[in-house]
Image (cartoon, rainbow, N blue to C red; front, side, top):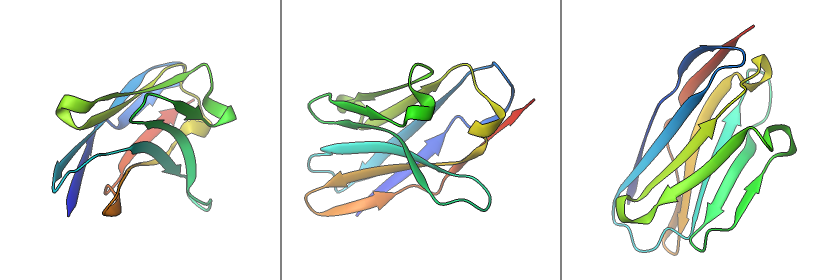
Length: 115
């Protein structure tokens, strides 16, 4: 089993920044996929950004140019730097990691952007 602990969420004004972190622990083999997803009230969960073990990244069109995903393999940690936040970025943000033995999700961290 892999445990994920997210942190860094909170309340911020529009135009502000936040940095989310997700630390993986437990039976870690090779986290070849690490990503951030979000779910706003009444909406489906959607991919925000993802990064592979090789460093390839993928972003939702709505966050391109504003959010940056990165990872520290030595610390089994994935980060999401969020700049120029908008009210529509308000959601619960979830970390997801995938390895050979499984697909794991964090408990989520709330991000609220006030306009």
